[in-house]
Image (cartoon, rainbow, N blue to C red):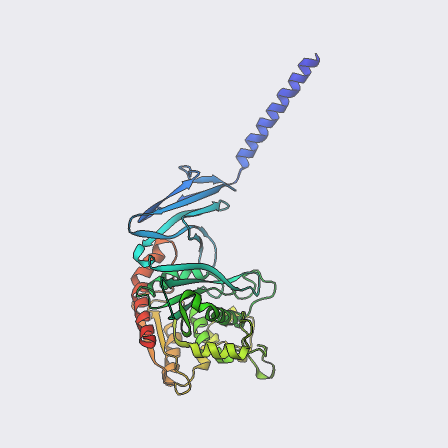
Length: 410
């Protein structure tokens, strides 16, 4: 009788365990993983994605990419819905990338022609400061054997609130097709609390990050073959504003604060080289920046004050490059500017107003209205549409920008 009772109890436990496992399987969260067909190369996914694409949450998959002959890896990536522009991409720049499945996503690999990168040394994620939660960093694109080449600093766009330096790598590569420059693509804090910082970041903090990056770049330029006294600045959209700020607001670098007390607005770089005074850094940055190429960006805070918590006009003026254009007799800052005729975010009037002020002060301006182009055509992302837009508009106008820089430095 005892044996029968024990056997019966064991059967109940087995049934209970089977039922629990079945329930667990039924409630296991699943996500759709879509593999994007590669071009000019191939990649593998391990473990293999089921035919229906459904993968259990928490599964770690490994993407391994192999370029075709004549091509090199651009990035392994995954893309998901979310972020300021509707989709967000996370990219890796080595042939193997591990991804933990925790949402619906697309995965893939992108390849570029080898002649774009085979003569470059690319250094990713150089940290120049960490004033908040996010380490601030830049990428360096340097021709092999570079020595004392002029520097181009690129500032990415994204509404002061998204993207990072990776999105400018297409432009960086195009500016280096003649090996005339060393290119630094920089990141910065996002406005308000979007980086997770407890204290909101104001617009002047982002400008201070750009100055901090440039100070760090100047300090380390020789390591990459760059000349710290010869700098061009460029950027698109919000980066257009920040690059114009770098060119025109450097004379406002100082350590007396940005509160407007006694009418004082001074930018304190988020990185200061050891042993240098803020006055020295101001002079070195101001003297080094020789040319600017702010692309389809707003340069008057009146056009983007919705991104700021401040409400006073004096603050707006202090972060508006258009309010600080020097007369050419005092300082020459030639400008190369582009805007797409179909840009839905930056009206023609905004860019034209800046061009008019520059010309009024005697500055050299080369302004292109790019027929049929929309916004952000200098961006580079893994998706086919963004890359096609860059090929159609970004590449030819990167060539025009490079020629303009050449006219200044060569």
